[in-house]
Image 1: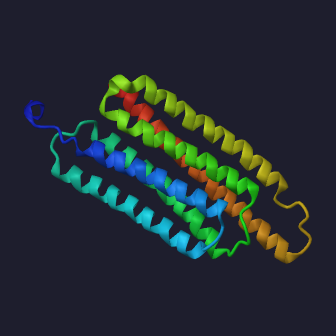
Image 2 (image 1 turned 45 degrees about the horizontal axis):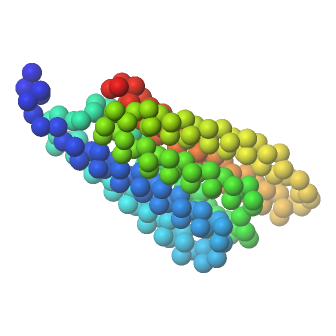
Image 3 (image 1 turned 90 degrees about the vertical axis):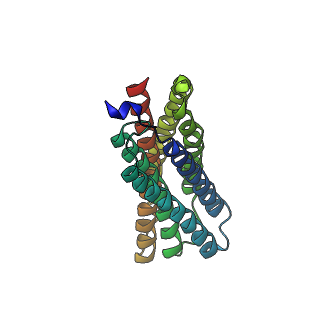
Length: 211
């Protein structure tokens, strides 16, 4: 009964907004990397710095949970949403890091297209997350959740096309290694769209629980 009279800590919503904005920022930085593939090492370092910001937010959420008696939404939902946002950011950073490690000559059109889909998902999430504070905005949030899921479907179809074409023209070991590396990179990009969908599903679950 006492919990009913304790203040609810609203800073979790701010953490979520900041994490979603960080996801938007890192997705845009990744698009810049693949669209303008110059000064790659510097750009990848910058992307890694954004990822560190995401880690710091996740840590703040964890620490805040230990200091808060009453939370604005269920604790398990806070942990889930924070983790899903962090996973999305981490996966984009890993894709960028692999591009630098593998010393690719230039991104493929499939990679650029997938990066643009990821950025669209990130923007939709950055717009959806603030609506969590006022569940009267649930219909708008659900529209954005549907958009994220639709973009993930588009990424799946794009992944299929990229996989089909992956080994076209491969005739020696060097080309085989290049194709294998691109297969791994495509998987990271497709994983990023999956992680965005995971964020959307977490938002959906919270919205339906409290709506």
